[in-house]
Length: 292
Ligand code: GLU
Image (cartoon, rainbow, N blue to C red; front, side, top):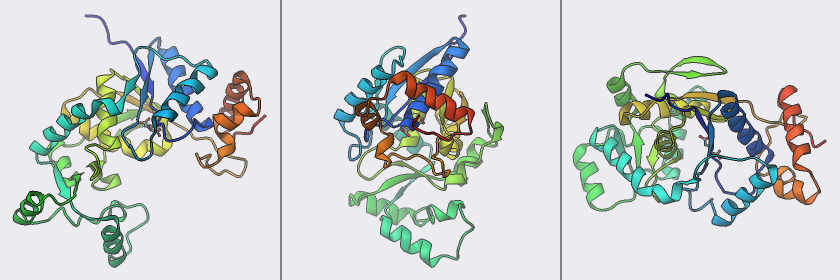
């Protein structure tokens, strides 16, 4: 049998113009694919209809072409795949690992304020578990009334079902999976039927991604994705979480720093080769990016 061809992906969300941080992510994905003699796929992660816009998706393709970065095969577009995510969600519901959450953001904030201060970053800071222990009758009645709800992953139950899992990060080494690190994450939102965690896990499997490259800011999410793979019976890739670019003061470059968007760099006359070289240089110097 032919061995699986290594595959990486670049998966931007078109919620604005591409930014130098995105360029780094694209370069990392392309580079690892080339090193492995594999392919690099492109996926437009546009499930959030409030933040993402088709015109940004078009500009994103234009920015990538301007950079001279190429991707293999068809471009996958998440907004066209809602049915696939819905099926995955139904499968998880049938397994009893999700529960409906009727809390508003305000309610969650109030509950957290009432609770004894949890250590910084603990799962309790993220969702206080209000709806996890709701009586079955109340749950059924509120669902029957059509009350707006999200679906959350019951992390403790999941851990009992999957037992101990591991995953490998090519930079950080082997990791023991701790799905509760982000708390009971939302897998389907009130306003649409899927969240980032579910869509990305389903799509990485669908696109045959063997090596997931992405920013270190998503490291914790990988614990969630690893359990979803176990529950949904999906193949397990390896991950490479790369460092993030920052400015001279060590502040992470963010989308709001408009000066680093490709739009402003291009209109200021930046050449693609120079931009790529400046990112390489930043990588060699601990991630500090300066416009050269
Ligand atoms: N769509 C995400 C972003 O633009 C990246 C998700 C991922 O690489 O898993 O930040």
